[in-house]
Length: 302
Picture 1 (cartoon, rainbow, N blue to C red):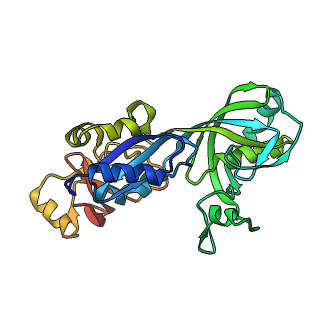
Picture 2: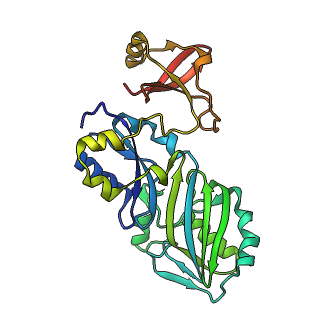
Picture 3: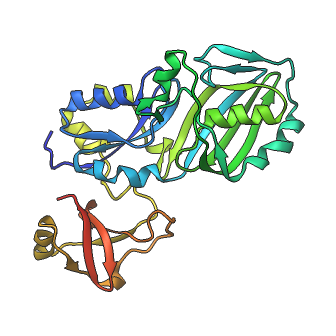
């Protein structure tokens, strides 16, 4: 593939494959020079995995900070070593909470709270991944992290399992929520089904299954499966650049003057207020800061 081609793939990752292996298969199949993904999905979780191609990889952090939607199922009465069904059962309880009891406590988790990540996670502890230390049966603790839970809805409760959907922020662990929710209900619990349904502007409606993607040809892939780099970035200040002299200056990392009034203004979240993204024919070519009418590039993608 031409390394000048850039953009996003709205990938639907299946269960039983890691995020890394999923994008490795895409890279190998379509001979992509550089590829990356935003927001790792657990191997036993399915759902939306935003994939960046070539220079679009420089924009991954701006997708990672977007809100995410999840559907998940909790099984009550058992805690596992990984907080999901892949781990060994380490604690049991006969207490199964009722739907009313669950509804009385779930909203206490809304807003910003401190959450301890699962020990089976990719967080580093003294330079080593937590899941690797767990495999060695060593004792260790993870520090709580500040996370956002924007909304939570109880969908269905049946015998010893309950379905939920949530909208959450960066760094949120659904497995930790299941564990902590069970503790608050005086029992144990773990995830038995997990699906990510949305990441910012990436959602199920426009996604493509990994197996379907790997079956198509190169030209069909480039024409139908790669979305422009600006199209799936949520809540940004954007400005279209078409002057050749400006494009040349930007390619050299130089500042350019732009017309402030022509910036496309969207509702911004706190992570993006200070940045302006410049585009050309639908793709991001640079992002940086604006001082009056002078744009100073932070990163250049051309």
